[in-house]
Every structure is written in structure tokens, then in C-alpha cells.
Length: 385
Image (cartoon, rainbow, N blue to C red):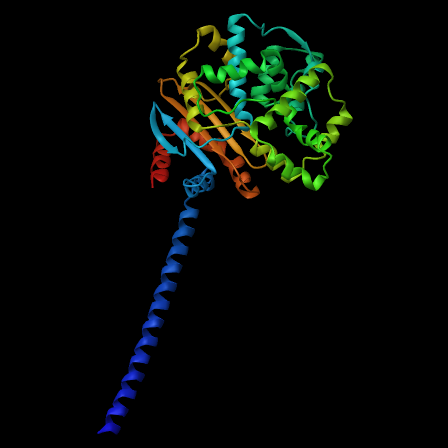
């Protein structure tokens, strides 16, 4: 009896083992089938992506819960998408919108004359070669025989249309840094950092290196140890010094030579920050032509507007901003029926491939949001998931 029971027990164990192995095999097959289905679904999704905007929209969706992106788009004041709207991120050249507003305001008040001629040498004292993607030279190439002297309005157009940093700092000199920052307060932008000169910040590493007698490998840590106020103050001090004694080309080259990628990352991280909500407020105000006079908007349109082939768009303006780690876009547009779009896109900590995708597709994203109702609905649905 015991022998028979033992044999039966062994047989049951073997049977259970066989069933277990069979179940494991089935589970493994099911898991493989699920993974293959997910891979096929992901492949189908990617193949079905809009070739003009799909990769960038996927990036936005995948990073909606991160601190690398803020996105706010509205159509007739109704949200299309809202994402991290109170996250303060580096503005890069989007900050130039504030300077354009200050320029138009001072022109309206008679504090500056937009037609006043200025020697190009006065502008070029703020120019650092090979630091702006060719923006300053591209602007100068449009001036033809006028390159010896330019008007203040032309300088402002070069700041907005070509994003010349040298033009920006020259206008900060003429308008006044305090007045520019007072404009931030006047616009009630509660999450906006103080603005400081852009080209002067290029020379901060050289100043910190020399004044602290540092080795090159100590520079990044020393820059990061500076608090924001101290960092900005160095830029302001350099800016004021240059107004009396501009840097030589050799001194500029020495400053630029320090800008390896780690130092550029510090520079990018320390740029003036603000939120998508701040700039959506600005772009909505400008789009509706609120808060300021007709004379203000006439001058603003002269320096900050797009000439579009699409006759259905009544007026539009946009300002981008980028570094080796950032790509931003601020847009407003109104069509002939009075429909309005405002869009703010801020990014940070992009790697090279992400930056390439953003650079290739951000303009198509902007254009399709302005022109295509179906696309606006797709974006609303995609980013609501």
C-alpha cells in the first residue's frame, strides 16, 4: 500500500511539473505575443505620425510630466493644450519680446526716435563672432550700402527678425536696463527673472577665471557656485565697462575660447527664466492690441511682425529662442475672420537628437496650429491623454 501511494505521489508530481512547464511556456508565448503586438502597435503609430510634426508631438507628449517642457496654446481664448504652464524655464531669445515692447513704448512716448541713425561701430562693440549662429552677419548683409549707419528701428528689426544679440545689448544700452526691467513689472509678470545683457554674459567665465585665479577645470564649479544675483551683476558690470571701453577682438576671442559645452550649459541654465503663462499673457495682450495705444502697436508691428503669403492670416508675429540645450517659440496670429491663436513652447535640457527634431518640426507645428482646425483637435486629444 505504501509503495503504491509513493508511486502515485511521484506520478502526480511529474504531472504537475509537466503542467507547470506547459503553463510557463504558454505564459512566455503570451508575453512574447503581447510584446510583439505592442511593438507592432508602436511601429504603426510611428508610421502614422504626421511627417511634418509627429516626432516633435511625440516628444512633447512623452515629456508632459517632466520639467523639460512647458506648452500653452489657445484658440479664441479656449485651451488647445496646457502643460507645465507655471514652470520657469530659460527664455533664450524669447526675452527680446520685452525689449521690443520697451522700444515701441519709448518710441510712442517720444523718448527715442526710431529713425535716428547710429554708427554700426556702436552696435558691433557688443558682437562676439561665432556665438549667434550667424545672426548678426545675416542681418548686416540685408542692409547693403547702409552698413555704415543704421536706424534704431533697423537695429530693433535685426534683433527680432534675425535675433542679433549685439543689437539686443545695444538697445538695452539705449533704452536703459532699469527701464527694461521696469517693463516686466508693469506687465505684471510675477514669475519673470530680471533681464540682463546677453553678450556680456559670454564674458562672465573669463572674468570669474581671472578674478579668482582659477584653473580651467575649476571654472564650471565656480560658475555654478555663484548665486543668480551675483552672476547677473557680473554681466551688468561688464556691460557698463564696455560702454566706456569696448573689448578688443583679441579679448573677445579669449572669452569665447572658454565656452566648451559644460560652460555653455551653465550659460544656458543661467539665462533669464519665465513661465509659459507669463509669455502667453504677453502674446494675448499683443494679439488683441490691448493695454497700449495705436501708436505703440504701429511701431511694434514695424519691428515685430511676419509678412505671410497666406492671405487668410491678418496679422502674426513670432519669436524663437535657442541654445545648444533649448528651443523655444512664442507666437500670436489672427486670421481674417478674427480668430486668434497664441502659443508658447519652452524646452530645456534637450539632447542633440531632440534638438534636431524640435528645430525641424517646430515651425510646422506653429503653422498647422494657425491654419488647420483638424490639427488643433488632434493636438488637443493627443496631449489630453
